Length: 146
Image (cartoon, rainbow, N blue to C red; front, side, top):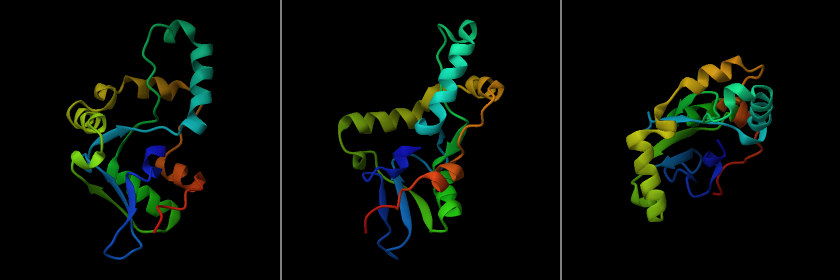
């Protein structure tokens, strides 16, 4: 979820100089598996260590679920009371060719190849992943510079 605080992908809207815009080159309904590494990593590692036969040799995707880009903007508004919106930009605006190809791949194939089995495994854990609203409430990010 920290990607949403990256100054390369956030800005203040020029139409009102108040609204936070989260600007990425994928459609607003693109589903992304999001995680708060600072909070969610430890419980996942503990689960792996406690369940080696289930986890060894298996890909371990870490996320509490898939979220739309526009949901992250709505969660920011809900958590902070500040206006926010998602803005789809061009692939080229992402910067280097590596970023352009990464975002094209996300749009075409999704992250984790759109697999969702990990969500069922994560539900077995005695832990609830941080939601976008919880992330914004606990994150001390003040928004992009004006």
